[in-house]
Length: 612
Image (cartoon, rainbow, N blue to C red):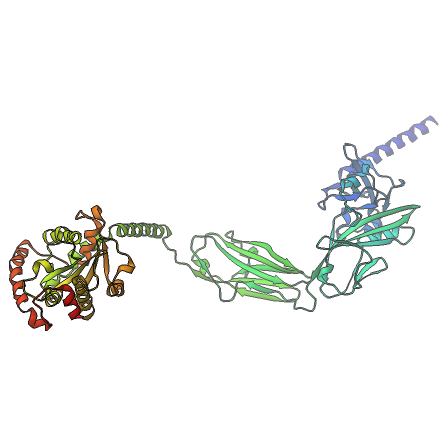
């Protein structure tokens, strides 16, 4: 008897050790998928919620029905926030219950927040994955009113074809229907894009509630926005509820063409490329709204980039635009260290969806590089030089013009037979006469070497004023008119000289009139002939002491208007000796050349009246 008892005790101990070793092996072989990448599940405190085991998110890997047939069991564990010890979840709780692959919280409490693990296990295999639950307190959600209701779960999206019909169902309603003791009731809310909130029934008849669903008879853009559905149901004598939100958008009607198209590159576009540089070829494709796959890609010589196996080639895909279901996608082909051999390759961009396919070739052309640095420096130097030349010309234009005339100007003495360079016309008063004789004549004859004619000095006694005046003006290359308030009064000799100069300038063209403003004269004080000819006459202003120096602006400006003089000292001396003889000869023939009336008395007023 004692030996039998000893044998029984030994067998029991062996069985216990064997079972313990099997459990240890099973625990050590459990594959851990870590924490789910779906993110944290949020539930509002006091509302019903549930956790779906992520192991069954891919039915091709794990299917709940097939795993139950294979002898797998689903276990739930919870690690509360602030705790280090994982606790198993038992199904006999009044709030927590299991239903297939879901763990229900009816309702959720604040202490339910934490890390939850679902484990699928049998005798030979084990897999587990964790997910995080966050229970939000109602006071943490700021609500100004009951419309819309607070919601903690993530928002789902629905695209409805424009002008089409649709039936909108509340997410999770079918799952709750299986748990409820009676049919749940659903309350709908609509928050428009402008922010206005409406509770069903809405203000139009295009949206009607059909059972627990919301039916759209005709979809318009004004019906877009957020829709909230609050589901209320009864379970085990408790009234439970939860709220979900749906973002409703419109897409283009299904009647429109759905074939993809290439927007860029256009057929006539040519991409400029440079050897040794990075080249980027842009391709944009339009994919109309369609529940289908879509693809945009580049091929080089008929091969995709994966088949090409060249590290210099890469592509960057991005979405450019999304509007009413139509997406514009971009694929950027990047070629590093572009070479001459790459220029001969064929580059094609292609787009495809379930309705069609299109491809387009990219045209490449080598861009001749310009020496940008050298070109920029040259352009900068050119601009600086032009600026300096502009400043120099603006400041020293008179000096430059005088230098040019002295080098390239023609001496008028070699092209005409005139005797005088300048004939000076002025008002016969002491101040003007002093300026003409002491300043103008002295500088023009002694300093500048011009031959000057002054009527009161060069006319011979006994001659006629009109004939001599016209003769002197005709034999002069320039008529210098000294303007002052007393100049060109009616009937004066100065007016005769002015009229003769203007007429000679208009008829022959070899005589020019120069105005020297000795004293300020108002425009109203100018005679009619002077006002008419002012546009074509040069005006040089005398500025008193500022113009006394020979290097002043007055003398430079006057020299520009006077004839060019480039004579040697010997020629000047010979010209001075013959000047007096020429003047006497011309004076004797004055009467026969002019053919005007004669008068032995030099009365300026009478002579002018006779000439007019």
